[in-house]
Image 1: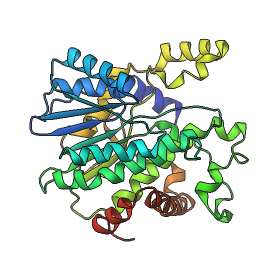
Image 2: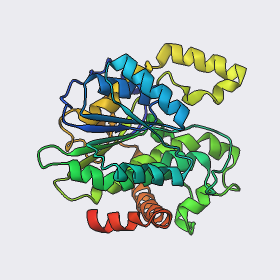
Image 3: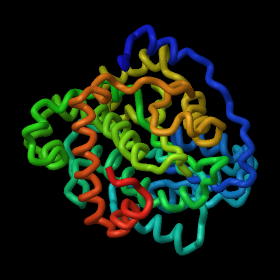
Image 4: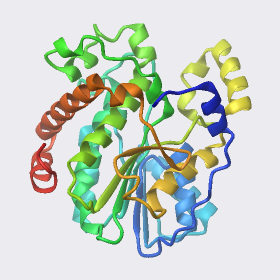
Length: 341
């Protein structure tokens, strides 16, 4: 059963996770959102293993320079590439991939880590609710645009890796009640009238559920044996800046501080889950799955239910339609590399 229990949650939170030591000397790795938090710690872990190439991203040039210096100093690796990537902007995602292709780069691993959590309804310049675009739509766009490069780098012996950072919070996402009567799932959950306070309180959880669904749909359409293993990873509850909006309220800040002090993993400990999924052997056994504490775990009951599976399929179709309009390459990638289901 895919349910979050207090006992199971605490046991995982207090579990010591393994440090990955796999050989990546011949691999090119990409880590999104490496200036702070999980992405930063994951980048340091990977850089210490001295990969062939390491490309990290941050939201702007200034943060790119600082994160490059930080990761190089802490890891001892030089020559790290650091490029801007702003997930609030589809144009930024497209430009990143354009630059990647123009430079003839390769990728054995993509860790799609960047994300936000906000309970305020705001829109990106493209008209999408910000959490929904950053955590889901832009992450899906980047993943699909990078898919041919990951497939090209994969071999029958060693599949490339696409790692999307999800969360145990996906267990807490509210059911999309009445979705069977909605003309469009995405249009509805993006609509400001739908996004009441209670909906926005749950929005981060929903975005993590949608990532799990995306990984399941994508994996089911990749040929077997796959040349790229995809997974959704739960880093656990960690010390990070993800809760900074909640902590802007003094009362909530006190509660969150106490909670983190008792339960939260260090950011470094949580980052081990990302690195494990990205480089350790057994990638095809983890393909299409939700991972927690460096092991395959059961997705939420809602994800696996008949209702959830139908939501997932509809969401996949709607997502491809939107992303295909944003970048025509999506349609080509889907037709050339994915099985039509």
